[in-house]
Image (cartoon, rainbow, N blue to C red; front, side, top):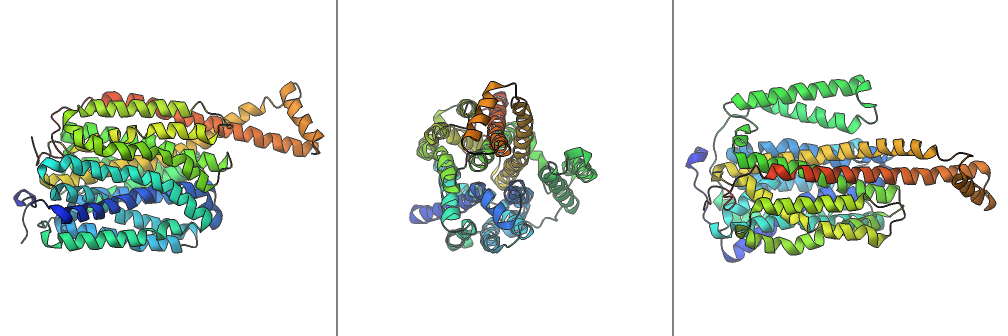
Length: 517
């Protein structure tokens, strides 16, 4: 029987083996989603080479997934109320599995991008509802642990993602980074349905906000397409990019105005009236912008500039998850004793320090030199993810948690998606600028440049070949200086985010007002 959300009572908590199995199943689903964002990062050059496109076009495999996921996440609350949280979650997992298989079978970039779009669409409700189902199934006194376990899957995946992605890409082929989702997804879906299908949430017949949905898809779609293709079309000197930018601006502006007055909004912007939700989501999405920017550019730089294989790029990237994995349960158990704003501040300071540390490296940096700041950065990850999830959910009634989680995940993935496009473009532009600046030094009047060229010619190369090798050396240094610029800018953004989190006001209680202290 249909009911309003206000009448729906929270489900009684699970206990014992059932709770353990559900936690594993839900953790696997979240693990898959985060894994699929990081596992592709190290495989981009292989995918691009295999399908005959540039490395820049290869990043569409990352941003198309993030885009579709971002569009679907704000719909989570409406879909879950219409069809039930359990059914929506299980169908999302199964769609994710099917389109993972199609990603692996793709034979062209358009086919792969389409499969990644649909895979991302499946993952949207899956991630938001994984947190909602966990919180509904845990006793009130242990919901901090539930948050920590959920966040742990977010931080464990970056350990395995780059290594697994690199290993499968180098030793098998890139489609296997998608095929591994099949057994994991099927297991997660079957366990969740078995345990929860008799505990389905009550449904509520609400009409879909068609105008809001069209504005959302058009606005976010045009924005993402503009960001992905702007660099290739010389940005706003291109009529296509200018048109896409204007459509995105108009659609997103009208979306905000429309949703604030719609009776059944597709994006519940009313949540932003909650001070803690606003502060938490702004800090989360901009923090993810900087964090994800580092995680996209770093493996690309290692492979395209320093000559790392996908496996070694993965091994250099992965240590960020080690301390995160070890510290997450400790933080989860002790959150009620800490000022969560102080914990997030600590995370931003560590992120800023390690990003600045990265910005000091040159192209001769050894593997161990590169790994150390990645290892230290891991301290900040649980201090970033776990408290922010608790902050933005604090004070919200139980029936709003799915919508709030969906909307927060929307901004998180949009931040990641925009970050991919912006940082790759900025890296290339700064690389060109540094290359032009460094080339000015390769002149007959420069003794150092003459010495290098003479050394190469004495080694048996012709003068033109020697100049070609010199140009490669200049390009290597230019791209390294450019990646240093990206890391430095990310460090500044992390510092600027610290005052934002102090706009949130305690008490933060457990995860959501339904749990209240």
